[in-house]
Image 1 (tube, rainbow, N blue to C red):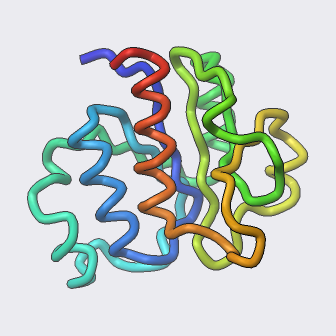
Image 2 (cartoon, rainbow, N blue to C red):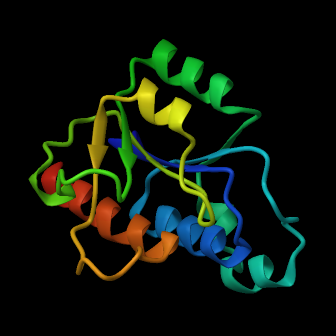
Length: 153
């Protein structure tokens, strides 16, 4: 199956969130990119317990660094979109197109400023002001569902 969009996790910290994102990618049929380093082992019992056999059905791609991932996107002419709490641009009002890659930062720190300055497209999931952020796996599910809806997948 040809993919219409991808999700990228930048240096994720929490094994269970990555495992649930892999399950979401497997079930919805989009590639999942992970920018290393992983801050846990894939033999971690929290990862194995949540991912189960879904990892066998996920188009999973690892990138050694942000620069390697960024070059990959440039060569493939994929548009990079950042999911962040540092914008007012709602994901539901954004016009997704085929080939988009939505990048999510690490759970404990988000994305570094140098990445924010490289990328023009930024979206957020609107939330109540007093709340910090949604869980990474939940955010991946919400935004990937909207992309699927917009692209009629």
